[in-house]
Length: 337
Ligand code: KG4
Ligand code: ZN
Image 1 (spheres, rainbow, N blue to C red):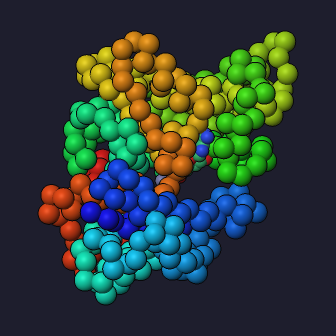
Image 2 (cartoon, rainbow, N blue to C red):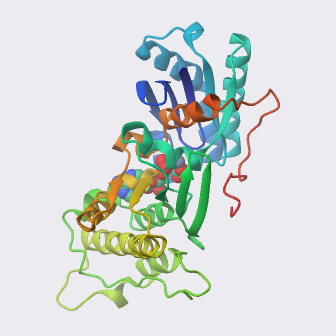
């Protein structure tokens, strides 16, 4: 089954052609980073305008790169929730028309599930496993039972982890996109220069939940309080100390969840799964007998391949949408949101 996957939920305009869920024939990602750089954050209206300009070319490029004619496609999949509404609508409407005129099935895909699925494309992992979803909009620890069944164990109760990276980078004018820059700067910084605090949560009420707004506030508004004697107040040290604590917060919950659930396999996904410290810490779990997978860097951030990959599973099970399918900014298959 050859599927075209379209992703326009935020600031990446992406189209991919994937065969039988595993063979990525093309995965074209046109990034809007330069457009949003002056604002150090995604401007929704600008994002949707550029998606409108680019979508056709991006799809053409994906077909060409895959050496596939549109008539050879078996189905079209597209992200339709959650995300920026205007941006989503561009992909949804383009994809529906495209598939409709070709007379082939189409299906709207949940962006969060697609991130969680991404690692399965390159490194299939047996279900169930502990899913770690870390992106600009979500921070979730869950039990993944199948491609379509997920039990949420914990989420952030305020900011998402990627949002915290982006806001710290913006405040200190470190560069854009924030997560990538902090990851890079941290390599030359001292992670022990600042003792930034983690959240103190009521673990009875929130067994696996996380919080990032306290850490963000400490780094932005009170950093001097946390500088340890004998250490320097440099941007690299702020970045490295912040990253250390941001990763600690989620790793603590990952370890607790693994311990409590008895799950032996872990897989991460989403933009922050590209973070080198988080990847190293997750990989380290293998020393304790866990199997750990995450997507290659290109499949961590938003991309069409994960959309087509996940869609294959639904279509194989006979599920698809009709022409009424639309975009939704918030509704996610994860009830908790
Ligand atoms: O999954 P994604 O592309 O879009 C959303 O669904 O949100 O994730 C984007 C997020 C941004 O917050 C970005 O700063 C973060 O992923 N990110 C990183 C890294 N690469 C991207 N955060 C930390 N380290 C990285 N290497
Ligand atoms: Zn995403």
